[in-house]
Length: 254
Length: 254
Image 1 (cartoon, rainbow over the protein chains, first blue to last red):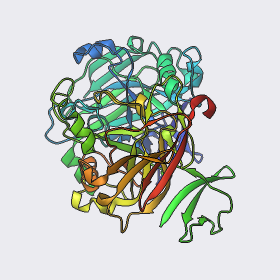
Image 2 (image 1 turned 30 degrees about the vertical axis):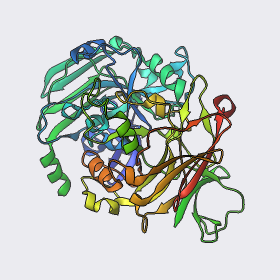
Image 3 (image 1 turned 60 degrees about the vertical axis):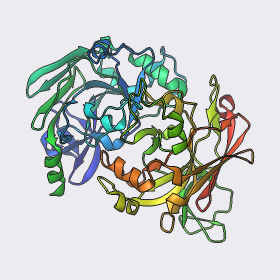
Image 4 (image 1 turned 135 degrees about the vertical axis):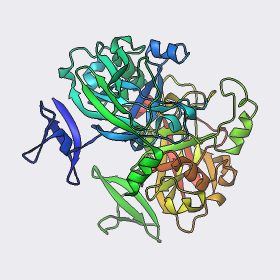
């Protein structure tokens, strides 16, 4: 089953998504193009840096010995089929295709053996970064990773039961239809059970919390006008479009 | 005016503090029992790291060396997740297996309207209220990676007791005092912030949106106040409030 949050005629609805990606609101069947897709959950957003060994090598880092966790706030999240802003006058902004784990029940001091009991399901995010703004304080800092519109997530989340093996899913990114990034969740440095054990060892996780589990190699710069599609096999395909800061301000000003 | 949130018969209720010191419930009735305070915030809690002169001056020599290589340019932010936020009087758990935790007395700035790309001159118009924050943390020996494990433990962010309307408050003149078991241990002047309150709002809102209900922690000084299980820690800001919390061993908190 696919679960989504959508906006339609000014109202927000929690809906099930049909096979053809239509949704049913108050008995009315609406096509995917007729609704605004919102981030599918509303809890704390954790994200992982350098959690694929190949990607760490690409960035000239050794894979970490402890998870490199950072946090995001709701202000950076956006939904499927929305725009993401490339700031004016930057040289390198890249996508990151990631599997997202959705927490299903309160988790504290959970062992890896029991960790999957606390998972509700999975989603997809595109954890954009603007590398021009990296500084060596709390790296990656919020100015790189928490900018408005730079974390599309969705389009929905799928039930855990619908994903046979989350440790064997292909991740792919296309820019303007060209495949630019490909990897598999089996190559995570710290797998999902480990991450839940790790985080819940020092803090309480709550239903709706999201863990973006990191990205494999294959990063590339994206520019205004690009259509970027990130897909996790069996979970979802998340589409968005890059706009310039100037274009975005004009869109907002209308 | 002072506004707070309490838990009453398992329901979250808004209260206002009257001139006579009594609390009025949201239905206009006086509160007869002693309140169980909740953190008076609903949005994201962001902290500004390295924003107090005492701390920055202590690190000035290190900023040019690895891993930092240069002094910070943009505000260095962190997030205090919802599991950290507790009200006045609630216990701060001293985590099992942790050597040291430290108090972080600071001013809390509550955003009143959506702030994006606001100037320093206009910034205070976006502040609804001020409050008192104790940004509890494990000691940080490095600022290179995000401090999730040090700062996001359950109960590590007492806030309150209430919000004081921002009108007639000049944040630059406020003094934050931290007491342990009644003894004054630290004094932190908002005049010593590296970025003043309006400058902080301007610089943050330049790269991300602050929403109504979000809270900014203005900046903790060089940490000097260790806490032990059994202590009572109080953070007081004259004219804003006095936030008091017991510290208890984690096992006892469960």
